[in-house]
Structures are given as C-alpha cells and as structure tokens.
Length: 329
Image (cartoon, rainbow, N blue to C red; front, top):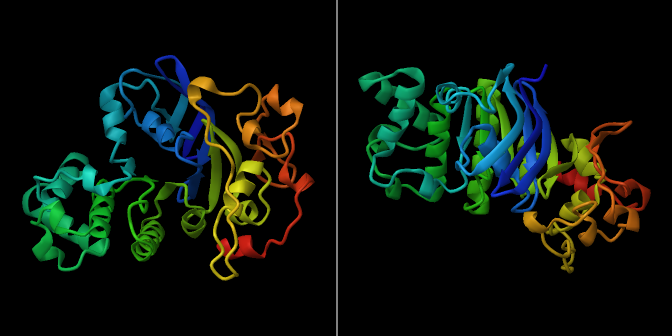
C-alpha cells in the first residue's frame, strides 16, 4: 500500500471545477515531480490535501496518509498531520517568513508545535537545522531578521522550518522559482541530500523540467486540472508520449548548439470556467482529430510502463533523436 494515496480528488471554487479527479500514489522515501504550466492545478492539489484552501473551496475525493483520511477530517486531526507528517515549502520565501520576527524564533515555533521543544533545547535545534541547510555562522545569525538574509538563504531557512517537524513527506512548491541559476542548483542539491539522509518522501512541484529530472524518481504531468501522463523519470524524458509532455520538452532551449528559434506550445492553459469539450489540450495540439474534441481520454496504465491519457500518443507519429532528452535525466 502506498504511503500517501490520492484518489479522485476534485476541487471547485464558486461552482467552477479546477481539479478533475486527481489520482496519485507516493511511496516511502520516493521523490515525485508534478510538472505543468501555471494554472494546471499542481499547488491546488496539495493545498486541498492539507485543508489550506479558503472556505469557499469545495473538495471531494480521498487523500490518505498511512490509511488516515485527510479530506473531511476534523481540524485537530489535520493540524497533527500538517508540519509533523507532511510539511510544505511555499513558492516565495520572502512572503512566507514573518518580516518582524527573528528567523530563529520562527524555526523554534515549529519545533515547539511539532516536537515540544522549548527554551535552550529549541534554540540549539534551530541552530543545528540552520547549519544543516547550509546557513553560514548559524550560531550568530539565528537572531537576525529575514531581510538580513539573501533570497537563497531565506529559502534555506524555509526548508529548515519545514524539517523542524521531522516530516515523512516534504512538499516543495516551486522552491527555486525566484532564485538565480547558481542558487537553484544549490537548493536542488540540498533537497536531494536531505532526502537521502532523512529518508523522507518528497513531492517537487515545478514547471522546470530540468529541476524535476535532477531530484525526482518519477514525474506526473498535469494539464487543466488533470494528470495526463506519469512515468519513471528516465522513461518520461527519453520517450514522452503525451503531446503536451513532448511540447514541454521541445520548448527547452539547447545551449550547446547553434542558436535556433524555440518551439513553444501555442496558446495558453484554458480558463477552468470555459474548458473545451473533449480533451482539454485538443485546441493546442497539432495532432488532434475530431474525436479529440468530443471525447475525453482516460488516464490508463500502458503495457510497457507509466500512465497516459491520450488518443494519439506521441510514439505513433513522432520519431526523433533521444540524445538531448537523455542528457536532461
């Protein structure tokens, strides 16, 4: 049985459905990537799972951790899971940290809530966590405010706060979006190291396929509130089958070849209020047929590996070298 199991998760706001039956399993110690453009429902999936959406959200389906149901669970039960069993790193550390409280105090608050540590013990553990995530001179900087740290260091402090509860699962919601390339690489390496040392599972939410390939064992590609393809990282990057996945990979610039025009996916993610009938990706897909505009493909297990929701898998019409994709893995 999967450590975390999501089944038929649906979310709507004011009658507009934004998640359409998400299904996902996560094993102990596994790193799973959630990939897709902004607005595909990646973050909403986990905000719904942890009951962090506003009251107007309507949530149905099932989210279980070790068999414990989270959807519809009483507040005290959810609070025991949040931070302690499932922790989340949010996108923007500068807005997630309290600007008028010292970073050490914020880490110690997590230690008090989730592990019952107080006073000198909490301070010592906060310094240890700051050292663990690579904050230099943590002993003297534990009493500084967030604005006295760089963006990358603030992200490391957010990771330290998430680790304070010793979670079984860490949700990293685009943790490298606001960072430059060098700091991004350091954060990815840090997450991989922490996962290896602690044995925790991780969900890495990102639109950056290169980052996902660096830290994840498996990835699920989301589009318009649905998972459209899922597979092991090596298989997904070597031979993507959904046209959307192919488009995401083809849009990655090649830095080691002569300059050429990028191949973007034309159009944008549809407004959830005005989803097209049939396959939601059909209006942007160059291989869509009339059948695609009237019927919705189901996410089905494939004979070789992975899951796919497409009437015209890429393997049937696209043949090209795999060298570049293999380099990403």
